[in-house]
Amino acid sequence: MDLENMENLENNNEEEMKGKGEKKAHFNKEINEKDGRKKFFKKKVCYFCKNNIDVLDYKDIKLLKRYVKDSGKIIPKRLNGTCSKHQRLVTKAIKRARNIALLPYETRY
Image 1 (cartoon, helix red, strand yellow):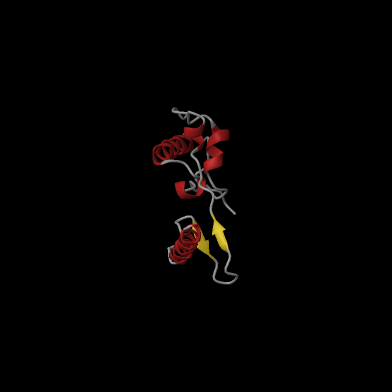
Image 2 (cartoon, one colour):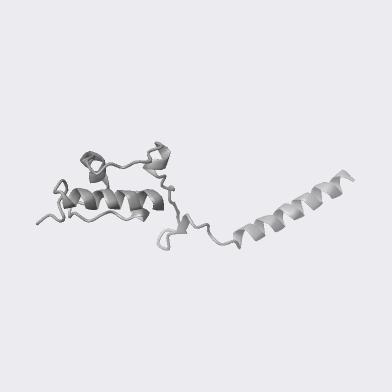
């Protein structure tokens, strides 16, 4: 009786392993075609949600510079990891700071 159960378990495990190989890769995994290795992307966490910051001040230039490239462009949320709500607040604060000349609109090369 025990041998039959063990054989059934082994057969089930083999079938599960075959089925797992056919699944598609998750959204955060990519297989590199050159070397066949998997790349894992670490999910970015919103800095403001993590630190419970609800109000953004346009006068806080040190914080706002983190979200602006050297050329003066605002970094998109997919690159800096902020959530939609806080990305809108960051954008609004950066535009206000630009308007009163605390941040440059663009930098010349």
